[in-house]
Amino acid sequence: MSRCLAFALVIFAMTARLSAQDPTASPEKRGWFSRLLHPFSSSNPVPNYKDARLRGLLLELKLSPEPVKLSEVRQLQVSLSLKNVAKRAVVLDFPSEQRFEIYLRNSTEAILTIWSDNHAFEDKPGTVLINPSEHVDYPATIATRDLSPNKVFICEVFFPQYPELRLRQKFMTAP
Image (spheres, rainbow, N blue to C red):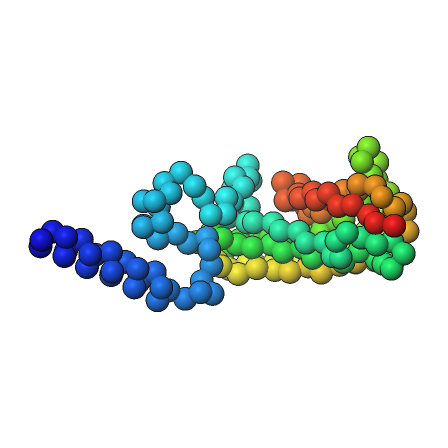
């Protein structure tokens, strides 16, 4: 009887602790109970870059609106987020004011639109410091004039100075 009572108290303590956790806490941090139940799963896998300076960076890309209605939209909203999930700060050095590049490609990988063609950048070097558990957002828009309806296209975002920081997302256009 005392074993059942002790087991019930342990379960009660764990559930109370889990329900008392902050709901805004990042899902990347897993507790020991979650690791015990799901030992081989990962909540958010972080890419392992060859460049040691980039380890711990997580790149996210969001396109809106989806599907892209070409009759209503002249520019595609691109939201790029660079998160530092490591326990140390990451420093990124850039030779000019340009931080990232966006390519719109068709399904045969041909480049239709280049984001930097419509922007001017000075050759001023810059540095971006991303502290642990922080992120940098880069909102941008790119013209949809070369897109055609009812086809699949690819939005490719990358950092020219750091070729490993590259992300591609497919999207479909609507009439």
